[in-house]
Length: 442
Image (tube, rainbow, N blue to C red; front, side, top):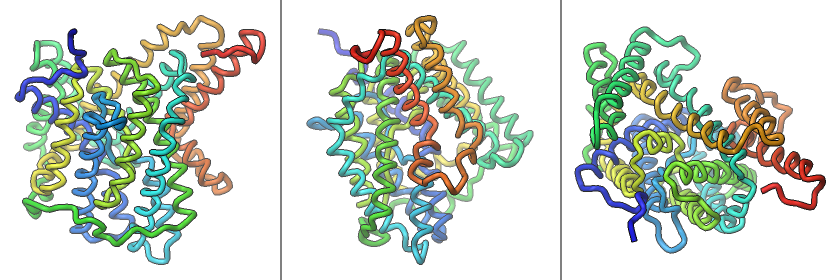
């Protein structure tokens, strides 16, 4: 019986190159939350560096749990897990409630452990939601994932300063990288074509050197070896408000991960059924529960890597497992981790337009298969996309203090808000089209 492409193990050289490509695509997403949290908590540079290394280490463990798995843990799909940026806002809110913000990490870690453990117990029940994701819903969510990620690429082109206009240098590097990737995809064949993104990032970084856009300062003082000492910032502390806030976040992350698994299953040709989603959610939540022991934060699926799988058609989960192993090694060696950071953000942004646009286009393909001319499918997709894009196009749309913080966590996650809207509208219009509430629209 032939082995499914997801379960095939590429040759060592190809495994290394494709794994490194996943690292390059997700590195910025992994290190951004600890950088933001470290600066907000007033940690010294050495401690922020430690926090970044810990996040890389725990992201690697979570990715290995997801891609390789054991028992009933792990979706066993080419699925990268990393630090959830959705957790930054509630974690900053928790820190703001503490008398000393610099001592907030033990409270945050305690809340993440409880939320992760609760999510692990809920996984076999939460996965039953898959029946509410017919093609019109899953296609809408996949499209929304891609559209929601595009502003991340634009922010990279602006060198991480979305409040400022993009510089000519940033635009030039992003445009050059985008053109290089497109040309490589057009002229190359075979394996070289599959790593066009990686080659484009290398070429873009080389172009950035004479432009003075490569910052080598981070590599000068980085230690060669360093282990994320358990409970480096203190033993976990449990506070009920913090725990409740992180439990809500965990439910949001589980919703997004469910949508991401459905998208990835569609792309790799292996259906993400109830069993796969339950196993994937267990990996998500177990990785989150274990992360605080090594000074990491809550982990969730990284949608940007779905675009890489869709573009390269490299469906082996072992390429992502190689990425996870590299994350672990990078977490143990700050010096090597700093080398990945040499890639300028505008270069990442140019490649990101290709990656994230591919995800959105894949979602459009699913919507076309769903039949937008059937019933109220078009209305369901249109309204859900509109609701999901609100926080994408207007980041302070829900900033009014009268809106409860728990509700803000859900609304500010465009994927979760759009996903819930699509599920509800499909239920309402689907049942109405069948003349009542006696039949299921899925």
